[in-house]
Image (cartoon, rainbow, N blue to C red):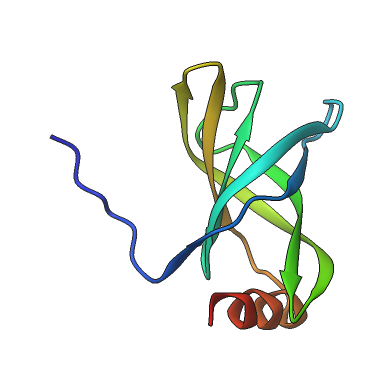
Length: 106
């Protein structure tokens, strides 16, 4: 039996996302949920655990759409039906990005 090892508050978020990795074309996806430390996204393509990518996604905060970008590491990649569910951990997000995410999580 698998045990959920995530900690901290998570919130469902459904928006567009783009994943950019060195040497690969940008991949379009959709966000599933977000926490202060990371984000899960669905993609049509498999990624490997440990891969590093620039992840851009849209959050609606105080009625305004904001596009955030953060270098992130792949924590898991699970095939789910017709797509892959991929968990990313943020790597050194800037203060403005963290402030926006924390405001969204409240």
